[in-house]
Image (cartoon, rainbow over all chains, first blue to last red; front, top):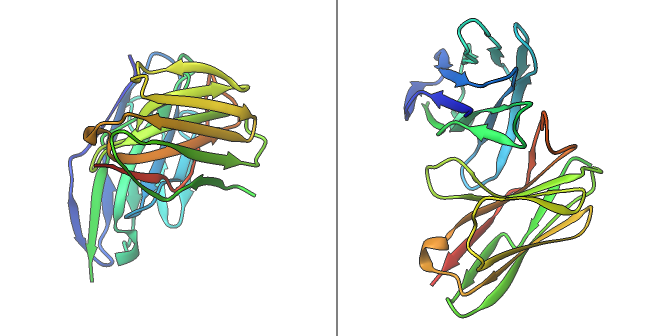
Length: 112
Length: 115
């Protein structure tokens, strides 16, 4: 079945540091890929998405590129802010499935 | 309007109580979802409604009873819950269900505490 693996957290960074959160997936078809963010005490918000190989999703300074050859969708940001502290979930939606498959989530803690 | 609205935001109930969680969306989406999320875990799918019909029930205990009165509303009726059911309950919607689901829009959740 489909699965998503993301790096264990927490990831602890200082403000303005570079961020990478790794995400790899297993899927039988050609999935769409997503990063969702969950701020403390809130629901999930879509951060960015990519629907086909080599697509780059971007939003709020975050980027992720759909790499079919490495089955990866790593999240990057050049300069993190304290307000980026949250839990980040990588997810996929496959033509063979009916809903999203989530990774376990990675907590990001950014200190001033 | 790209919001999914959930009420109440917080609910405390005893094990013998009957309560309901409500969810509303006005984006014209035809698929609606209930997820359960425990602390520091990803959301777990409970139910999917597609075109107002229950299409997925992920072996959820019968003390949770979903209802979709119309295409904009989704309820989750709660009865005889256990303390381990305490969690954040998230409602979501998407334009379609089945095949490539695409983007899910989530509400802020209802935080349930069972005493």
